[in-house]
Structure formats: C-alpha cells, structure tokens
Image (tube, rainbow, N blue to C red; front, side, top):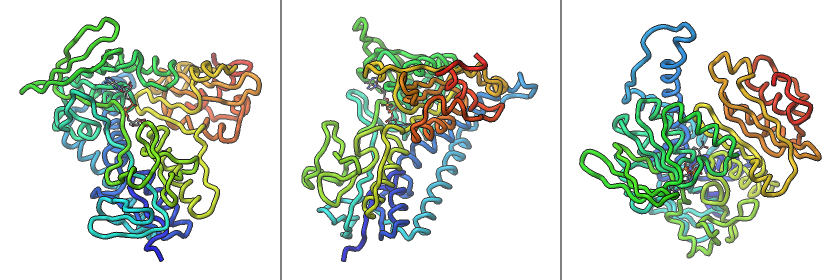
Length: 462
Ligand code: NAI
C-alpha cells in the first residue's frame, strides 16, 4: 500500500487548499513544502504582505488628503518604516500559523523540504522517498527575468525584495504596468517615493477592459505616478550611488535614461518547475512552458495532476484554489469542475479595480452584439460621503438575451462588489435580474444595480 493517497507538492493557495479538501474527502494526504512557512508566494511574499502595505499606505494617504476636510485636525502621521514592515510580517505570521493549524486539524502531514518526482507515485523529499497513488503539482511560479537587468533583491528587486526594502526609496522605477507594478508602485508613491512606471505596451494593465485601464491610469497619475508607455527597457546599470535604466521609445526609436535608487522588475511570472524534470517524467508541456492538463487538472501522465500557476490560465491565487478543490474532488471520485468564465481579477490600488467575464474589446473581436450599462460612483451618495466618487461600474450584457457577459468596476471596494456579479453570472443571470434585486441604501453596491438598470430602461440617478 502507498504511504499516502495524495501527495501535494507546494503549499501555496492551490496546494494547501487542495490538501485540505483531499483530507476532508477522506484521502490520506501529505504536502511537500521547502519554505520555512506554509502559504507559498501569495501568503509569504505576495498577495498578503502587499495588502498590509497597501492598507498602511492608504491610511497615510487618507490622513494627508481627506482628514482635514472631515474636520479631523492635527499633523498627519509620519512613516516608521521598520515598524510598518513589522506589522506586515506579523500579518503574514498569523496567516501561515493558521494554515499549520488547519493541517493539524485535518491530519495532513507536512513533508518539510523540496520535493522531486522520481516517477509517478514516487516523491523524494530530502533523503526520503514517499509513495502516493496521486501526485498534485502545485509549485506555483517565479518572477520572469529580463535581459540586461540583474536582480539582486536589494536595489534591483522583484516583488519579493520590494516587500522588504531597507528604506523607502527616493526614486523608484517600476518596469511593467501590470498588477504587481501598479500595486507596489502605489504603495511607494503614497509613502513619498517618486515613482515612474515604464511599460512596453501603449497602455497599462494588459487584458483588462480598456475603459478601466484608462481610468486607473488617470487616477494613479493624480496620485503622482509617472507613466512612460511604449518603452522597451534595454538594461539597468548599477552605479555606486544610483541606478541608470535605459529604455527605447518605440514610437521614434530614441534611447533614454532614467535614474533611480530602486528598480522593481514586474514583467510577469513563469511556472516554477525546479525538481520536476518534466521531460524525464514524460509530462506534456504547453508552448509557454506550463504543464498541459485536461479540463480537470490531469497531466499527460496517469496519477499526476497539476494546478495553479504551473498550468495555463491567469496566475491568480483563487484560480489555483478552485483547481485545487476540483482535483481533490476528482481524485475522490466526484465530479470536480471549475467555471473559467467566472474568475474575478482584482487590482488593489486606490481606487480598486475588479473585473469578471469578457472585456468590451473581447466582445467586439468576437463580433458579439452587447449592451453597455454604466454608472458613475460620482452619483452614488455613499461613495461621495467618503471621498471615493472616482470610478464607475460597467456591465456588458447580451443584446438578445440580456445575460451578463462581463462586469468591470473601478471604485470603492470594487474587489468586494465584484462578487455580486460573480454569483449572478454563475446563476446565468440577466442584467435585469440584478436590476430587480433590492439593494440596501446607502451602499456602494447600489452602483452595481444602477449599472444593471442602465442596460435596460436607464439608471435612476444618472
Ligand atoms: P503582469 O503580466 O500583470 O504585467 C506585466 C507587465 O509588464 C505587462 O504590462 C507587460 O506588458 C509589461 N512588460 C513585459 N516586459 C516588459 C519590458 N521588457 N519592458 C517594459 N514592460 C514590460 O505581471 P506582474 O505584474 O509581474 O504580475 C505577475 C502575475 O502575478 C500576474 O499574472 C498577476 O495577475 C499576478 N498578480 C496578481 C495580483 C492580484 O490579483 N491582485 C497581485 C500581484 C500579482
């Protein structure tokens, strides 16, 4: 008999969630993790610590910009950077311990060390070989490298180094106007850094509905971030007291230089496959170096499954979690399923951005007839009361059936509001279904309802 029913490799959101569901379904489960703490990139050096810094810097921004207008007098707080990092680390610590507790509660073994798949059903961790009926690869991703830019995690950093800088830099240059670049760029801009974002494309946030991207760029510009678009970074030179970043502007081929104290490389991530030797195992890979799977996470090798960032699809913690649950259910003989049409994406800037389903550009390209319902937070009483009238909700529904095809929000609590749309879409709702649902007053959520009304006979407060 094998040591385990399932060995999951990697304890990020995909892996640890999958393991918990496996255990709940009665499978003997172990997780291999080489980090000192559970939770993977997301919890240790990604989603969670960045949200702590986003929160702290947002509070500072509020104190500096909105307190006086509300009649709150007194000097705005100054930044105690070491203390802020301590707060961030404490948040991470509480959460990683939480997963350890969940492992104990569910009787999941943590095999400490880096795993290597020797063959289907055989995993070596350090010196020991463990056997399992099923192996789930959930090894995540690592930052993609950029030619001419050598990361040292001190002055030239990825998101990992950016979450523990020695001090707040005076001048920060961010390469890449994607999610990481904009979130961490916002943090340091609010903390007083001069932030310049250099992006290869002629717009920010690729893949996002363009209306949202434009509105976000405007908002971030107002917060002091500078954008250089259509620019290919050629290299970063490390001088004693500063960094020199060279880029070429695509429109005229001109070479330009930016000086910085810190450079953040945020140009995407690639699957992390160390110790997996996919070729030797016979795992089929995609053209982009991900492990190819069927719709339920089975790799091309029987008994080996793959989920999350090592596979195709958006590199999002919650996508990995869904896949982790699906795979656990399939292994347990149930009918696991992920609805890839309803996976929300959130950018935790201020204003927040959230999106689910199809963008307007994608619908146009597919030649689909659709309606647009839009509502501005400027006309939402609750948003105005808290200085967050910037932004809007946009709902795209099918011209014929009114079924909701996409929802795009920029504004207060967008990352929370989006789930109303997700639930509606899971149930195949029409915009009218949302519009006829009573929404409490005064809430930000009313803006979602108003946008839904706008897909039909019109919003009330527009
Ligand atoms: P990204 O794919 O979101 O953005 C990378 C950006 O860099 C793109 O705009 C791209 O055009 C640009 N770029 C690429 N090469 C370049 C070059 N040589 N010069 C200038 N610009 C260049 O990747 P990012 O921000 O690094 O994030 C990695 C992954 O992590 C993404 O899949 C993202 O979805 C995920 N993530 C999600 C978060 C969230 O859900 N809130 C937070 C942070 C990361």
